Image 1 (cartoon, rainbow, N blue to C red):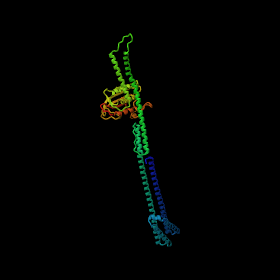
Image 2 (cartoon, rainbow, N blue to C red):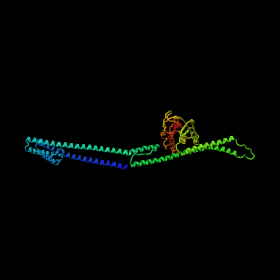
Image 3 (cartoon, rainbow, N blue to C red):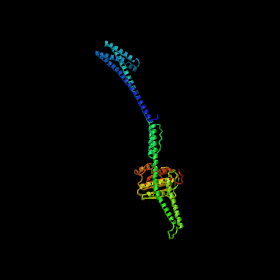
Image 4 (cartoon, one colour):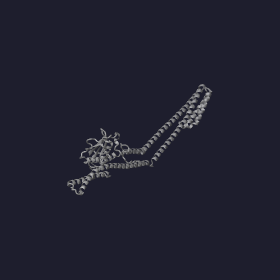
Length: 492
């Protein structure tokens, strides 16, 4: 039986049958107690009749009135009738033969009363009547006491059985709840935890240790949703990279204009020198040294243009991670040149990076990291502000702390600490912990995909580094990045 619904139905059916069974037992017990109560009423009736019989006996012995004797005879006859009717009940209470013994005593009592009626003044007969009457009442009282004990015992047994039944039902309910919790609640709690992880950007597939068809289908649907989310996230990340590529293209276009203009000017001068002089005019060719300088300029500018195009191709290429020494100052300057046209006119950039700082990493990925962070700073500051980019060598675990880091930085590793601080409005403190989550953005709807900082975080993790985001006391946001120094072996 793999269906959770059928198991739950079976469990509740079993509990229903158990409750019906216990209710039936309780009804049988109550019926037995009712029988005991009816038997008790019959014994009580016999006891009451014997008391009335004794009362009229005493009245007759005291006053000798004929009416008391007739009433006495009436109750005596009623007692004999009750003994015949309830003989099985009396024998069940007092033992076999108890009814016959009591009937014999009643018979002797009736004869003694009749003899005394014939000789009212005989004290011996009167004493015999009193003794027999007292014996009958005592036996009736004992029968009533035994009946009360029997009824009390039945009530006690019923209470005990009822408590046991309630305990059994409670244990079975607790066991059913435990099994349901183990079969249903635990897997659902696992799904809830995994959904919270998905909300935080961790697309981890769900593996449920449950054979139930419903939960297996739910896990399958959940994993299908995760696959779709992962596919769409990859699509959006690719789109974000294409947007960054568009930004790079506009910067490269501006950068290529300078070497192409220089090449064009030098080529035109050389071309004019090759043309024949005008008719009738004297002409003098270019100085050989100047001609050589122009050719060198053309070659240098061609190499410059080639480097720019190569940087663009490296940035645009979807290739595997390749770690190599990357001069940090050169990379920052190149990225700033590419973003020159995107920098607002009132924003200044101050770079404080020593030329000798070299990180170990993948140059295109590091350039994309810088591009995303610098563009975010430009957007945050608006038309006016200052962006400070600084770097220094450090060792993980020594020197200044690195609060709230995201990523992995191996203790004792030689690193380069890169800092980008802007003078914008900063990041709301309650959102600092989520800035690296996918699809999370503080920008207005339609102005950001929420993947820029997520891609930055992915690149940092690829390099085995770490990153933190914070607000500056004087205002603005600051991003601190730790990347492996060139002295460290590449994590790839």
